[in-house]
Length: 151
Image 1 (tube, rainbow, N blue to C red):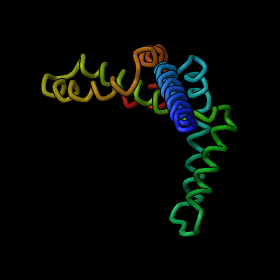
Image 2 (image 1 turned 180 degrees about the vertical axis):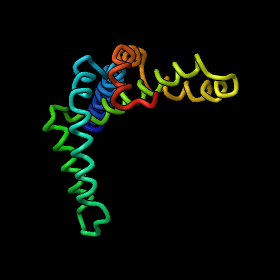
Image 3 (image 1 turned 45 degrees about the horizontal axis):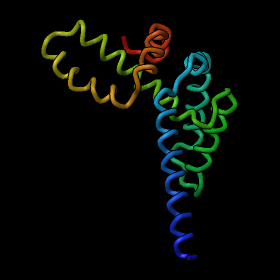
C-alpha cells in the first residue's frame, strides 16, 4: 500500500514537472517585447563600453576566481541597466532575429552563388527564433542595424 502511494506521488510529480516544462517552452517561444528591444537600443553603447572595461580588467588574469568575478560583474552590469535575470536569452533572441532579418535582406539582392550559401544559413536562425520575435526585431531593424549592423 505504501509502495503504491509512493509510485503515485512520483507519477504525479513527474506529470507536474512535464507540464511546467511544456508551459515554459510555450511561453519562451515569444520571448521579446517592444520594451526589450528599446532597452537594448538604449543601453547598447554604455553596456558595450563597460563590458569591454571588465574584459580588460581581467584580461590574462591567472588569479583563481577571476573568471567568476568577471561573470558576476557582467551580470551585475546588465541588472544595473535594467535587464532582468533572463537577459542572456533575450540578447540571444535579439541576435538571432537580427541575423535572420539581415540574411533575409541580403538574399534578396545577392548574386546567385552567394544566395545559395545564404539560403543554407537562413533555416538555422529561423528554427532558433520564433516568428513573433523576428517580426518585432524587423520593426526596429534600422535602429539595430545602426548599432550592431554590418550594412
